Amino acid sequence: MGKIWDSLAGLAWWRMRRAGPDDQLFVKKFGVKFRDSTLLEHAMTHRSSLGPEEAVISNERLEFLGDSVLGLVATESLFRSQPDADEGELTKARSRIVNKNVLGRIGLSLGILDVLNYARDEIKDDDRALVTLSADALEAVIGAIYLDAGFDSAARFVQENVIEAAASSPEDHSQADFKSKLQEICQAQFKVQPQYKVVRRIGPEHRKIFHVEVLIRNRQYGLGSGRSKKEAEQQAAGAAIRKLEASNRTPES
Image (cartoon, rainbow, N blue to C red; front, top):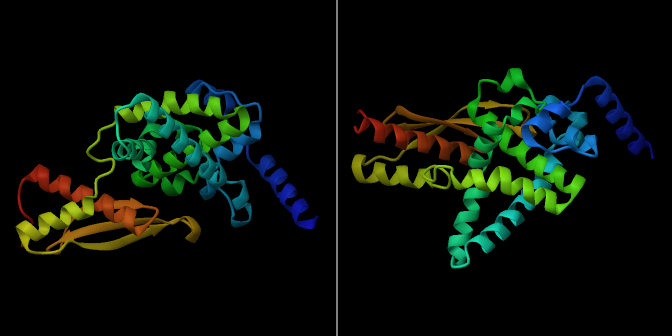
């Protein structure tokens, strides 16, 4: 009972300390009115704005739920809209919809960060981190809508705001394995391997964002960031490929 009381007391203190998201702004941007405003509060609260003892109040649990709802809605939508597609084609199409980069860009275009409570001063200049926060918040909103109004409402939100936008999203950067492609370029043309180096880490240990650079012949050709070093390396490799393609020249010795 003591732990439950401590949790409730912490939640009450948190609500007093924060004004919470702007419900009217959220309705204006997303056309969704929550019956349970607490769900919106949780969906729009990123861990970076909380102390360690408040982790349970963040949007991570709703993000986890929303990710599953999004996957199911995307799968059903593709199954019905592409009757001639085989399993491989459907899997590839679904991967584009649930991709974090695509979701993040959709969330940014919808203005979700205008409503999200996060550590703005720490993250405001980190474009990659902002994309990640945006994707997480969008999934949290999907989870919150599912709990507040049911599957049909969540599915309608996903169809109108995610699936249609993902369909028009550029395909070349959504699911490519940039590291493999860059390695092939380096092996075939330059006879060297690209090197990846972590140059910065931000955020608490449980929610760290990694910044990575990729070097070709000791020269930086790309920067990337992500929740894991692997994700950051993919982003850096993609940036390097785009730079090489744009400049149409080999790395300098």
